[in-house]
Every structure is written in C-alpha cells, then in structure tokens.
Image 1 (cartoon, one colour):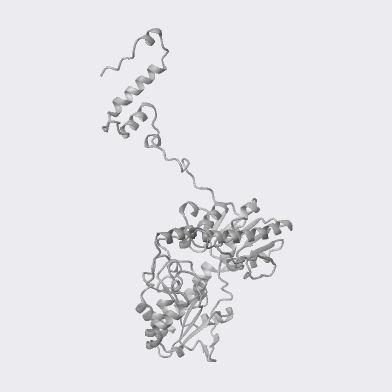
Image 2: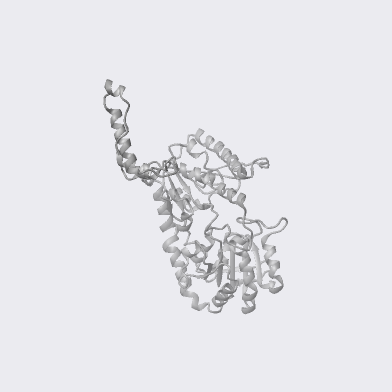
Length: 482
C-alpha cells in the first residue's frame, strides 16, 4: 500500500501510525512537510519552502486564506514531483489547518483521503469569549474567525473520511459533516510514558529533584492564557505558602501558540509572573522553557501534582501523557478535559477560573501523596484502556485506511428547495389549490373563502378543457350561480 502523509509539522499526529505502517512489509510511505518537518525511519520526506509573503494589500478577511493558498501552491509542486517519480498514493492522510489539502483531490483523484479533524472554529461554546478577562472581537473578528474554517470546509468536501481525537472536538464540526468523521485518538505510547520511581530532574541551578520532593508541575507548548497559565500563576502564592518545601516546575516557551496575542514587546509569561512576583519564593519556582522529551518525561514521572488547565479547545497530549506517567492530574472542568478525567476517580476537576479552589486541591494532593496512589493507578489504567497507541488507537486508525466510507445522510428532497406545505402533505388537485388559496392573502387585503375559490378554479378549468362549439364561442361565459 502506498501512503502519503501531508502535514507541515510531520510526523505530528501521524507518528504512531507511520511507525506502525513502516513495520508492515510492502508499504511505501512518503510525507510532505514544511522546513520544520522531521524524518522517520522508512518514510521518504519531501520538504517545501514557504517564502515570506506580503498580504497587507489583501482584504483582512482573506489574508489567512491567501497564505493558505500560497502554501497549497508549494505543496502542489511537491505533489507534482512525487507524481513524476511514479508514486500514486492509495491513501492520503492530511491536516487541513494550513491549506495543504487544497490540491490533493485534484492531483490524486483516485486516492482515499483521510482528514485529521482537529477543531472547527466557532464563536460560541469554544475558546472565543470563554475568558471574561480578555476582550472579545467585534463583528469583523467573528467574520474573520468564521473564515478560518474555509480550507477545512473544502477539505471536508473532498475527503472520504475524517478523524477527530475526542468526542467534543468532533462535536465542533458542522452536523452535516459529522457522519463522515470517526472519533479516534492518535494514541499515547504507554510503554514509554510510564511511572518511574527512580526519575530525577536536574534543575538549571544544579539542584536535583526526585520522587521524595513535593513537586508541582505545569506544562504547555507556550505559556499563555488559553492553557490557563495566568490562573496557575495566581494560585502559586497560596500553594507555596501552605507547602514550604514544595517546588514548582514549569515547562513551556515564551511565544504564542493559540489565543489572544500579548501587548507588543511583551509576552504572557512575564506579564503574569510579574503580577505575583512579590508573593513568590522564586528559589522554588523553576521555569525550564522548552526541554528535550527525556526531561519532559522525567518531570512527569516525579510530579506530585500536575496541573492542566485549558479553555474549551484541543486536548493536549501532555495531559494524557501525565496520566500515563501516573500523575495526579488537577484539570480544569472544561471540554474536552472532563471527557477524560472522572473527578475523584482518575483525576481532580476544578472550575477553570477558581484560583483558590485550584490552590486548595493542589495543596491537598501534596499533603496526602500516599493517599493519592489509587488515583494515580486509575489514571494510567484509563489511558492504557482507551488511548494506548499500539493496542487501541493505531489498530482503529489502521482499519480506516481500507474501510468503506460512511454513507451520505439520506434526504427526502434536495436541501436547497423548500416545499410548500400543501406539497409536503402530499395533496393535489382541488384540495391543494384550496389549501394554497387559504394561505395566500387576497389582493384586496382580505382573505377569500378558500373552498369556494378552489371550486371556481376547478369548474373553470373543466370548461377550458371541454371542446368548444360554435354556440360556446358566440355566447359569453356566465359566472357560476352562487
């Protein structure tokens, strides 16, 4: 089987599947990605270059789509080169978020396209407007948000099947497409991400932490409000005051991945650190920035309490990895976190904005570390049973490569045509005319008698249908008797 992966940051969500397919004899794997894409064994990687583009003259609503089209053009060049080499994929797996899917169906019309349906932007019930601390966009912002879905909608029309990692993320997509989308997570390598009582982490100042220490952990790709960084920082003064021996390890960059940008010349990390800096013992708060995966894994393995907060948005791998490593996860009671964490069983849920309750929960977890062991075990067990890559997720994804696409939803009539009520009820002839006349206002502004008017129309219709005689032609038609 010939398989093509298209993702600017390959392998990304396709790592586990690509590695599994690479082990199967007879498979030929190719990936197309941007300059930051990474190679995997047995996967031929084609990288494209995207030069800087000035879209200042493009209408603001269309600037994102302009950039996506420019990226699609570069992907098209890679696809053309691939086709010229004789490679015609049987299956294409692609992420629509950057416009890379635009040329796929045109270039390879016979390929089976499986779309990664990560998130569909919307103005209600999602990240936008969730946090009252930050301003919400006006009408133009809402229109711009809506247009961010343009390439995703085009990709949904082209694909054979889609895949969403969680039920809630699946629910963000338009209902008319949800029957095309399966719920399959990409999976966690639970054989690698597992508890390790001997885990150690060396801090930048030379000190070393291990499982004997009280350690609060927080992880995000970038430290920003969408992932609850500001809430976490505001809880730290109370946590550190209550637990004088606790250390806090924070992993994440200073940039912006999602959500609202900080004021020019600043970053969210510094803004919210400065807000609580006078109340913190900074000798016990350790910002590690972005770290190698081994250091990230060791941080989870020695964690006493792991905090994961998020707006209603995409579920991070780090939360599932924390559970797989046996962490006590204190997570925000938001979608899709509550889809995975069962409060009091395999984790602890707190309202996103409840700073004091978060501090209380973390302090309690640090105080009663031994009592938390059953929760740690339940967290790992839940991930193994539902998100294990090798035994659960990859086999399900592998089955979609050759499965029949879902049938289209059945409709009684073309959705663009609105049938009048008398036609929907199956009426015809005089009865239909009578009901139609009942619903239509008379020209004089008054409603005519529906039954009488229908009878007149039927009778006059019969006269027109009868053969005309000379007498009929000579004599004028008389109105029917009342």
